[in-house]
Amino acid sequence: MKTDRHPSRLKFAAIIFAAVLASLAGCKRASTRAGGGGSQAAVPVQTAVAVQQDMPRQVESIGNVQAQRTVSVKSQVDGIIAEINFKEGEDVKAGDLLVTLDRRPFENSLRSAKADLANARAMADQAKADLDRYQRLDQQAVVSKEEYIQYVTKAETTKAQLQSREAAVSNAELQLGYTEIRAPIAGRTGQLLLHEGALVKANDNSFTLVTINQLAPIAVTYAVPERSLDEIRRALAAGRAEVTATERNSGLKREDGHLQFVDNTVDATTGMVTLKAIFPNTDVAFWPGQFVYVVTRVGVDPAAIVVPSTAVQNSQNGASVYILKQDSTVELRTVKVSRTAGDSTLISDGIKAGEVVVTDGQLRLLPGMKAESRQLSGAPINGKAAEAPKKS
Image (cartoon, rainbow, N blue to C red):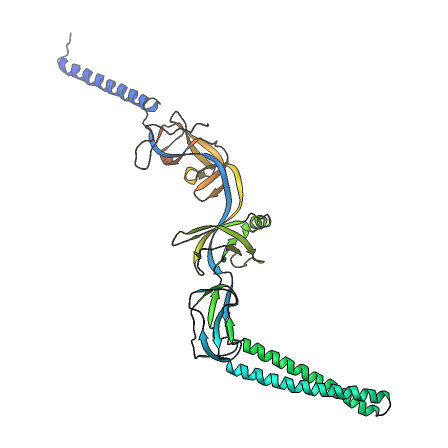
């Protein structure tokens, strides 16, 4: 009978085999615990609550501030500037005296025209008196018809000359009135380009005395895509096309604009339509030439379900949103997007008001996983997942 000459070696192998079995069993139990919901670590995410509210429909664009009316003031007669009656950059009213030209040449012309008028009136009176006398003689057949016709002709001629002299006097008075250059509109004056003693030419297209801009109210022109034209025209016809403009540098915002004009053509090269809105601008905050951010409100979507746009994920299967439920697990839900407005997205189906949606951290999630709502600092919100607010 043979006996094992190495019993200690067999005993050591048995111990090693038992240890391996125990280790495999422990790994299996740990894997089971990790796959279960009881001890799974929650994934930190950021969340927001879906809300139900009225959302305006609006068209966004970039616009340019323009004076509603601009007038380049010029002289209507040749003359020498005698007096400047305004200061650069000040507000003027319609009819205010701006510049006075030397009146003396025009006053002399007016006196000459009045003298010619007096002479023509005397000649016309004399011709009429002669005609009346010869008309009675003609009735008595004392003078010939040819002689009578000569006096009729002379009377008509002197009458026409009288009317011509009257027109000359009116024109001379008009020219004299042009020596006082007045503001045609109310507004703010610009830079004065000529001063006392300078010669101005009548209707000089190459030169302007001063430019007046109407600053209140003021206009904002901007362009919108062709696809928005129909909705904007309907809003304009219904009187609900409201316009908001924000100055880009200062952030100054005006919400009292009203759409006044839609151009009658679409630019074939850009596919854009030019619009103009009017703002009261009583404080003269907007200035011609500024660029502003323009929002045209054309309607409202009442009681819409709104979530942050970062909560919506798009794929070949459509849009989806992760919902954080009250048991701290997440659900991937397919939704229907109505439209996007800035940083918000309107959901037409798939979400109810008050549900909590995940806005950041979706890449680490799978349906059914645990999640914990955290702030940007990393601290949990109330120590647990955010819950939907209760309805009062």
